[in-house]
Image 1 (spheres, helix red, strand yellow):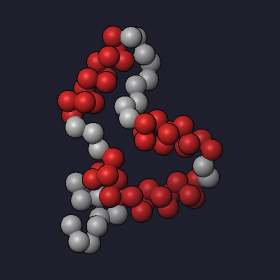
Image 2: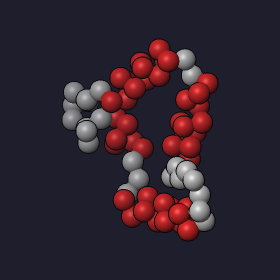
Image 3: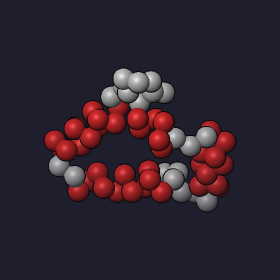
Image 4: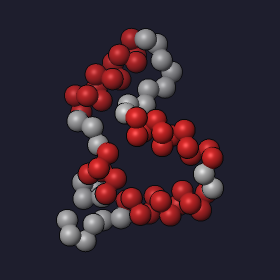
Length: 67
C-alpha cells in the first residue's frame, strides 16, 4: 500500500490527522475530513460518473513499478 501513488502523495502524518479529528470531535462535528485535497475529493464524488471513478481509483491504487 505504501508504494501506491495515492498513499505517497496525499497522506498526512498521524499526529496531524489525530489533532484535526480531536478538534472536530470537540466541536461536535458529524463528519471530519482532514485536508483540502480530501475535502475536494469527497465533494466531487457525487458529480463524477461511476466509470470515471473506477478508472481513477485503479490508476491511483496501482503499484508503482519503480517502488
